[in-house]
Amino acid sequence: MKTILLLLSLIFLNSCGGTADNLSVGNNAPDFTLQDSQNNVYTLSDYKGKSPVVVYFYPKANTPGCTTEACGIRDDYSKFNENGIAIFGISVDSKEDIKKFVEEHSLNFPLLSDANKEVTEKFGALNNLGVASRITFLVDKEGKIANIIRDVDVNTHANQVYELAKKLL
Image (cartoon, rainbow, N blue to C red; front, side):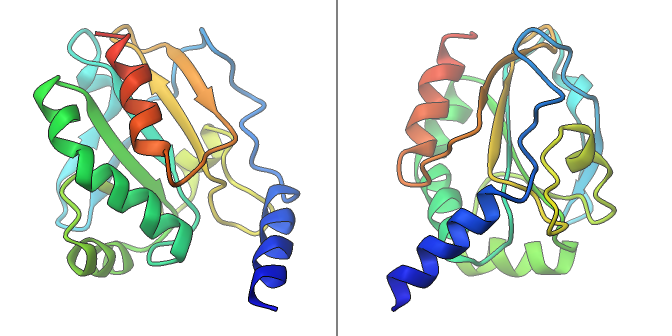
């Protein structure tokens, strides 16, 4: 029964919009300024000319898929950091919910709150349920979208985005 409910919810979430059809490889990535749960401010354009950036959207903190995805990045974060690859997870969760998520799973990279949903909408990742669809953007050093991953496998996401980002160095 649990498996059937999981499959139905995945099908439902995938049919709820948030496919980032408004953006394509080669487009300028929409700039944003968001805060993490500690009120640190991150602006995408600050990385222009410096490093590639992985921007991944996830539906909800502390849910099974989002936890698997975030913990995979946590476990591989040293590779990103050593190579100067910035990575941000973005959801429409409040800073308080993100703080609990970060603390509970010892996450070591910035998770940003887009509670007003503006950035998620600019990236075309906001679905009809009002949460982010699971979509990842790789932004090159020039601020252009180099890859869009619309079919994210949470179990292999960290390795996949690391390998793609390495090619942008």
